[in-house]
Image (tube, rainbow, N blue to C red):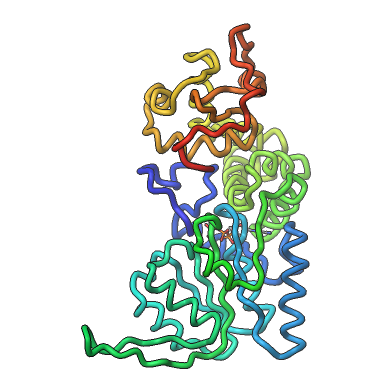
Length: 361
Ligand SMILES: Nc1ncnc2c1ncn2[C@@H]1O[C@H](COP(=O)(O)OP(=O)(O)OP(=O)(O)O)[C@@H](O)[C@H]1O
């Protein structure tokens, strides 16, 4: 479960893709589709994965290792669980940050049973020596266990049971080439479309015993930033509102009123996103303005603005990063109901220029 080290807990943000709390994880577990057929959206990934798994099953072999890449909350953990279930094999779960030494990985690998599925979340954050051990394990189902220290140390090769590694990463670009190359199947998970999210909201509502009409489900889906985790979270908030204020059933009006209360607007922007955008427009005439200045103007750290707010604003085509600073697009003025002054930057000409050294989305 990935998180941001920006000093701003994901639990504060309804619209963050990151998992918020242990309680949320319990609810998520209940909402997870258990089979490939129940997994909504990502049609291409689903079909390709189905072929990989079922051909391996027919041949009686362990399938190729699978790498799942995509933003937080898009269903990587869910797919790993589904892979194990489809194969009828046990699933072992660990994560890159939990593997600090090669020995931590050796302890896991040496106790895997034949055909077991090993899920390593945030695999890009694994310690280097462990990564090297993993190369050999993935390729030859073998690890070298080093016994002793200094000149007398010896490497004892140890066979391990054939297994399937499912790695998940939010940063495929950060994976070293040799590791990426050892995955036989790499799946890129995209953001979900509104129609898919609507189906996810309706399915979750059924499982949670929430009555929600189609318009309300569409309303929640449209504000979920393409992310099932956020859709499920917004659903629970609109359910609370409907239960307490409007007699139980979630209608479009009650969903709108609830999401207004929680400050999530029609495009899924929350208070922070709107503050950043509002400041860029009102205080800086649409930019260009440097990241630090923009951050000070909303009372946040530059990293918070850059990591938490900007990627979605850029994705929505509301803000652009240029060598001269951040600028608002014409859509940003329209979204906040403001009129661009004649001096506003002609943002369109600069859209694809990234400010050097400011990090990526
Ligand atoms: N395709 C889908 N259909 C239905 N529900 C989904 C789908 N994808 C994700 N979900 C739901 O969204 C929630 C988050 O999914 P999941 O934990 O698998 O995301 P993730 O990509 O592993 O996130 P992280 O990167 O934080 O580990 C779960 O409750 C899951 O039920």
